Length: 79
Image (tube, rainbow, N blue to C red; front, side):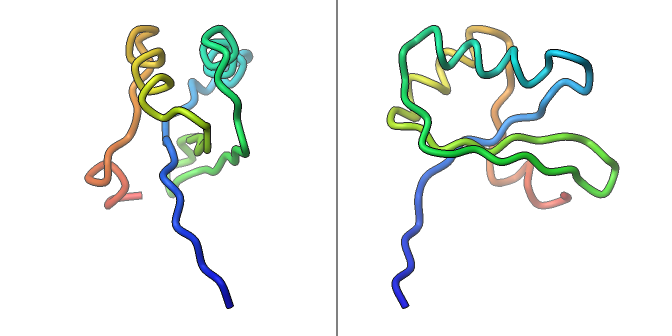
């Protein structure tokens, strides 16, 4: 078996119509390619998005500039 660990970005999705579109628009606007994404709900039904992109730094900065918080490992502990 081959296992590969990739760096990904996690962020909370606003639980409203267009919440996901908001995040994807930020990524599209900076021209970064997305390899994959998936969404999940926590125990409290909070929606989150995990994305794999070709430039994590650029996406993290763009999301920050747009007021979208990205998760760090500490945030994941209580999920």
